[in-house]
Image (cartoon, rainbow, N blue to C red; front, side, top):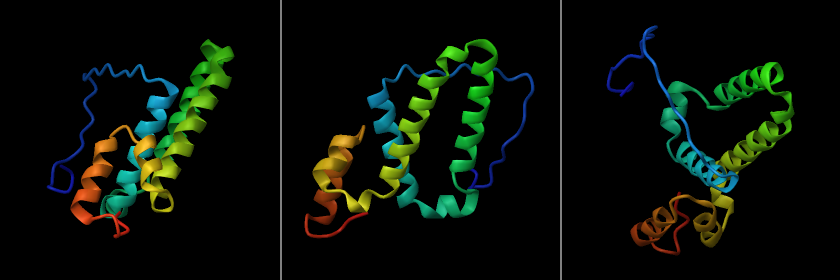
Length: 126
């Protein structure tokens, strides 16, 4: 949408409730897939920047909040964030993984089956 000319606007009265009840494995798969997407769509990264800056800002904000309201949850938050960071970077480096592992790590294993059908098994597809 941004590439098509749409704009981001701040709307103070807007309210958003957003939540996921993901397990650590589901988060791993989600962030693996995001890493794969970012490695395949470099034009988006070139145009809008890398995701790591936003991720680090989120972690800092989360830890600051937990420190004030429930410091005992900080170790678990750090573990979850490390899980996300690691799986994202594994996804970004997917070319080094065998197809069977990509399917096992992905939340969308059929994506990899479709890639093989499109490109064949001999090609090192993206």
